[in-house]
Image 1 (spheres, rainbow, N blue to C red):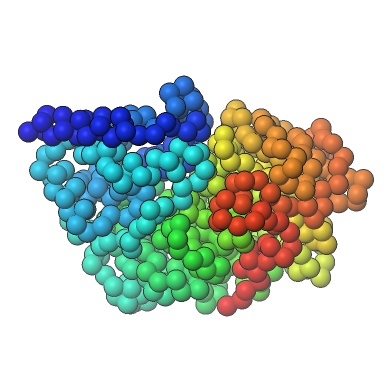
Image 2: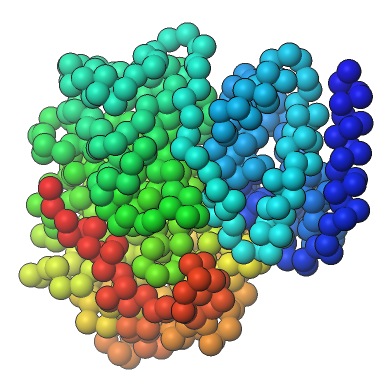
Amino acid sequence: MQRARLAQVLLLLSVMLAHAAAAPAAVPAQFIAKMYTEVLGRAPDPEGWQAALNYFEVNGCDQTRLADWGGSVFESAEFRSLGYDAAAITLILYRSILNREPDPAGYRVSLSALDSGEALPTVAAEFFAAFEFARLVPYICSGASYSFGTLGTGLAIAITASKAGGYGNLTETDLQALLDSTQAGGSVYLQQESVVFLTQPLEIPAGVTLATYGLPPPREHALMARLIRAAPFPGPMVQINFHDNPVPSGSLRSIWVDGQRARATPFVAGAINIEIYGGAEVTLDSNFLSNSLGWSTVHSYGSLDGRVCSGNTITNNVITAYSSVHASQQWTDGLSLGCEHSVVANNQVVDPSDVGIVVFNAWPATQQSAVTHNTVLSSGNSAFGAYAFDPLQGRSAGTPDFTGATISNNVLWSGPNSHFIIGLAVGSRPWFKAGDIGRGAAAIGNSTAGVRTRLGAGVVVSGMDSATVQANVLDDVPIPASWTSCSIGGVLASISAGLASGSIQSHEDVEVNGCMSDYSSAASSAAGTEPHRSGAPSLGLRRGGQILRK
């Protein structure tokens, strides 16, 4: 029976391919990234990334090549080691191949096929052979972002979870009541694969941890309990330390927080996934955070906003922003850090459209956060920056002090069809011509992991005095100078202009000031708008989010 069905699938695939138009030449970089994040629960490693690019460079991009390479991911030892049940696999098939949430009827059919013993390669081949996937192929093979829900998608569906342990079938009211009734130091565990729909912010009380039972890591994200944005309310999905508690604040572990943004979903600036209001001992660990509807995925407040922060730990999270837009002020950060004492390590951020990880001014406190061993990948969405120190614009009565703050030993890279205007920005004068000049930040040992990366400038030091910028190795492919008003180069430092000083690796002395812009086709086609400039007025969304107080 299985052989006969597989033969039918292969016959259907061959017929469709025989009638398909010639494939575009572009490498489907965002498809590659999605197969890693949606199927394997992680960003690509540099070696795997390069091997996948080479496959499509040699073989071209069409439906059969996508099916061959994508099918190999499902058949990999890494995927088989995850031990997913049929429910988790079905969810992944829809999100990774059809680029949408499952519809109830289709989900039941595919789930039944797997439950009845049909082999995963056969079921995956059916998805790749589907007419719906054939319609996606031109978008995928264009090499540009094909977002999420390109051909339409419904709201995530509730899955009947059968896993033992944890609370299941909860409403948002039920979950908030459970959290509120839990004593500090306690935890609320949700059932694996359960879904909670949110129409207003969910608050995690002081000292309470919300987690999925068994603490599945991001590589097993399809087992995580999911928090789903079910309405475009203009606030975060999850709030931590909302009431300024001096005791250890709340934590989030092994939860899938999904903003449900899709290609056609209107952008809502304040509708981010997670907001941390300062706090003590806040932990955000091993979560899967996807498709924020707003200006960032995770934002933390610090002393600059009247929220003293003695410690946030943000580690081991996978963050995807495929549906964000690099145009029309609809861009999205990965991690936006206002807390002056943040430990940010081993996170993977894929396809942010503004900045992957940005460290804000914390005046009157000294910003001393450490950002290390993270990955920022631009696969289909271009971005203004991968990593940045941002003293902000007109927010301080004194010099923004970053002494002790570090961005070190991180990696960044892009695909062949997307780019960063700046890989590593030490100071934000490229964005703000009248912006404050900070002091003391250190950027050391960051690299592109040997991957050739499309950059306007690899490193820019502008808006930071007494900076330490050393041993950063970015293997750049310069973008055309016509794509941005900023200077193109390897390491640029605005020393003669009085905007930079310190211990700075070999560099060109160039003024980079109030120039941030992207006139590339990637920027203009992202939202069907005119090419745009990201200067002080444009970045008001991101900086505006920082200003808002609760």
